[in-house]
Amino acid sequence: LLMKSMEDKDEAVRAAATKSFGDLSGAGEFSSLLEKIQKSRSAGDIAAMAKALSLICGGATKPEACVQKLADALSKSGPDTKLALLRVLGVTGGGDALKVVRAAVDDLNKDVHTAAIRVISEWKTGDAAPVLLDLVKRSSAPVDKILSLRGYLGMAVLKDVPAQDKLAICRESKPMIQRDDEKLLLLGALSNLADAGSLDLVVPYLDDQAVKRDAVSTVMAIAEKREKKQNTVVAREALGKVMKVAADNQAVIKRAEEMLKQMETE
Image: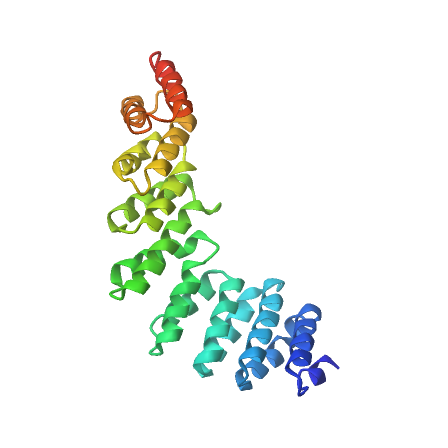
């Protein structure tokens, strides 16, 4: 009944039927829906079917089976459908899906190319980090480089990425950062690390008026979380500079003084 309603003349009816189809269907219906999206020429229908496909892939016990079918469909589809299928692959996740999306970066269609980079930049697991770093280094187009760099920095806040790898991502990113938004992403990632060895990445931003406040907060957060006796000299120097640049913030000055006093016994 839903399949029949997906052919209705009213786009709203088709969209509702497609959504319900995605809610109710499973792996057995995946191929028929995938075939249907490849034939569609309506942007609304394609979007609705992509969401339904994402629901099926997200609940699949063997998502790798979905990936192979999506890859085959991707190679036979037009640009609009490719954009939708790339988003489905992003939802599906996994190493196989990542390879398919990475291959789509080389698509000759500019929109497909950019969409593939965007999907990788929003990847939910750390296995995309080396792919994004490679894209940052290889990309000549500013938009590609910005998307890849921001996605790479985003890897530094994912739960499945070990702390030492997060710090490595931050260090690798630092020389490539130019924009304030990216500086803030870096500072945000570093503030969650308890490694005082990362303070050398933060201190230069204490002189940057655009991000100074966030840099102060990051130094304080790292100093609070660091293990005792870890990079004490570096931590003391960083807190000393914070006291100079945040002279108008008495709460920060007071807490910095307290931490410096505690370090005297280290």
